[in-house]
Length: 103
Image (cartoon, rainbow, N blue to C red):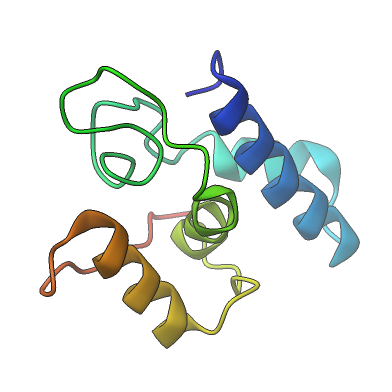
């Protein structure tokens, strides 16, 4: 994730939002580093990486940033129900769910 520009941008944007909300840089990075960072795993398949692993998907930058925020218990820039709708559309799974991580 962090070796690909699409992943770097989403991670950095999420960090920036958390800092703007008053969180210290070190805490924001520590929290986000607990999220899944392997592109071949959920939630990134069909969001930042095609399921066959052949190409990156760059059109979902805001979705990826919001997923990072949601996973660490921060409010995403999109409303939560909109985030779930966008995630389901990107993955093509109308029953997909979103999980937070323990922080």
